[in-house]
Image (tube, rainbow over all chains, first blue to last red; front, side):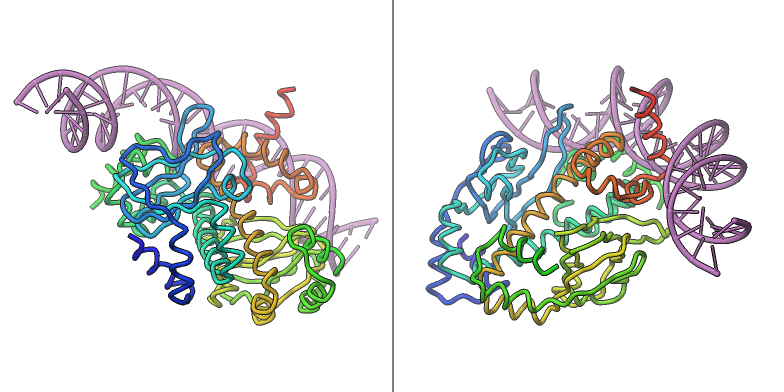
Amino acid sequence: MYQLLCDHIEQHVHLTEAELSGFTTLFELKTVGKKQILLKAGEVCRFEGFVTRGMFRVYHIDKNAAEQILYFAIENWWITDIDSFTNERPSQLFIEAIEDSEVLLISKKDKEFAYANLPKIEKLFRVMTQKTHVALQRRMIDNLGKTADQRYAEFIERYPQLFRRLSNLQIAAYLGISHEFLSKIRNKIAHKK
Amino acid sequence: MYQLLCDHIEQHVHLTEAELSGFTTLFELKTVGKKQILLKAGEVCRFEGFVTRGMFRVYHIDKNAAEQILYFAIENWWITDIDSFTNERPSQLFIEAIEDSEVLLISKKDKEFAYANLPKIEKLFRVMTQKTHVALQRRMIDNLGKTADQRYAEFIERYPQLFRRLSNLQIAAYLGISHEFLSKIRNKIAHKK
DNA sequence: TAAAAAGGTTGAACAAGTTCAATAAATGAA
DNA sequence: TTCATTTATTGAACTTGTTCAACCTTTTTA
């Protein structure tokens, strides 16, 4: 599973053997069963994680106990509450495995060590945060201007590999609609052809 | 107006006199009149800008000619289409001055020069992108789970300095609702007291 | 300073999305 | 396999938000 991480890094920056192993040895592998929770709202997020197997959801729970899903993460994606992790403040988010999963974890101290000693790692995370930000901007625009039907159709098209592995409950929480309404959208699509 | 930029940088990283002036001389001051457009969808965004006076909006226009506002930027905020700028691809966004404004612009080449020669600048932009990302995540969660009334109330509370300077048309496009509906929300609030 | 343009409000009819409750289907654990 | 739990579907009543058109106020500009 360290190979997945090495491949991922190589796609963004070029490190020497020594740099690469120096960085990857800062990570610790953790096995997480389905429905197990890695982070609870209220706790400080002590890790940044690279998913090597399975799938996670990062979500918020509001006063009405409704869940809003910020993102899903499968193999090769990162999970953390970036605000809680970097500023060491209590998180507003939950992170939960929705499949049996494996994740490589790095602590804040070790990440800062990497930033201080491996300038290319600073670049890696700057570029990754930028990419994530661009994706979130696009999603924001879609949410501001599009109907649930359109957002659902685009989700399927953009993330077919997530779509296949997710329940409609999860997708509805990601789209910001009730699962009943998603069911009605699906019915309409099925009968339209 | 270079002083504003220097102060802003100082809040995030500590640079020597030489580093600071080496970086800030890469910027060029531009005066932009109200309603003037800095970036049109379809063009490649050739600048990253630091606002020193006035106000901008960064927005998208969809197939129905409706506008979705991604963010506003007043003094001490940055404007760019980060995707178009870094990857040199056609933008999907517009950037327009909504007041008479002044902005300090840096080109991609000069920004890369800064990244290569001033490692602290890489950190500056990583930290800023992270902050922006955290704010957008919170806004995303609000959009997924809250009604327009709640989003409007929170906008006023969180950004009173923007609220005072913005028309309801702009705020509606930011909240993702019609301006007529925003008007009805305002009416309801006014008569509730 | 008049005219035009832009911004704001209101109401009525409509469309999009929620809630609740009932039921069915799929999955998981014993 | 069986029972319990989770997930998905459907309908009816309701709430939230849109659209369009009319009208009024404020700001800009010739």
